[in-house]
Amino acid sequence: MNNQVITVKQLNKHFENNHALKSVDLSVQQSEMVALLGPSGSGKSTLLRHLNGLVSSDKNSKGYIEVLGMPVQRDGKFCNTVRKSRSQTGYIFQQFNLVSRLSVLQNVLIGALSATPSWRSLTGRFTFEQKRQALAALKRVGLEQFALQRVSTLSGGQQQRVAIARALMQRAKIILADEPIASLDPESSRIVMEILTDINKQEGIAVVVTLHQVDYAKRYCPRVVALKLGEVFYDGPSEQLNEAKLAALYGSQAQLTT
Ligand code: ADP
Ligand code: MG
Image 1 (cartoon, protein in one colour):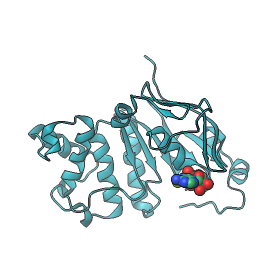
Image 2: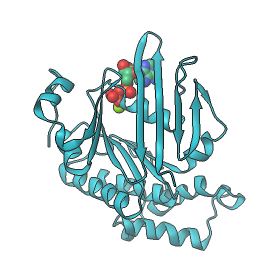
Image 3: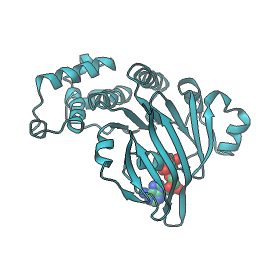
Image 4: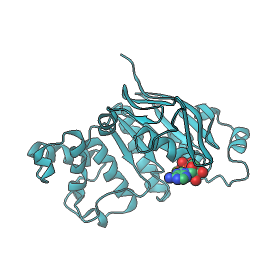
């Protein structure tokens, strides 16, 4: 079986005159946990959005993206399978993107909507089995005792764990996390990164996570892909990302550490 879950070939993206992604190639295997690094504006978020079919690449540039064996876009045009691959991809944002007026459990249950859309879930009624799964997902991130609380009463770190539980509920095979710890304190950051590591190892969910703290990448992600001015500047073991390479990557931009 082919275990490659992400294939990006010759991806180019212009925002008017700004060449934000320059012939990016990327392959990710199912078992991997990859940190996406690079200075602010280097194209990390733009790349992740392409993977989830939220942005289309340049027309007539022969760019190609495939996720979970399904073409997402080809030459700037979305493919029919984009919805299906998106439904199996959990997306985690810096600002959590939860529904603040709903309970923790209801927010996790939202993950079931993209996994198995049905008339039942559209009317907001979930099956007993779905509720059981949502509670199990909450337990997985250590938050089952908060299930019935409004999600807005939780701390930032806890809310990010709810977002991870929602991805588990979605039965995501890949998690794309865009700066998931950028708004969190060091302790919450550590917990979130440990949960991501754990589900990568236990559930075999591939994780691609953008980080602006290099030391978190080194601690939790065996592989780093670094972008600089829209180009892949480094792709390899995080332990080989030495001071000289980091200085060349970040230049004079302050490199944030914990
Ligand atoms: P990063 O996530 O690494 O900070 P981004 O992917 O957000 O970088 O941005 C890469 C480049 O693309 C930047 O120059 C940014 O200004 C530009 N960019 C990103 N999104 C848009 C957009 N929707 N419209 C115009 N320019 C954008
Ligand atoms: Mg970004």
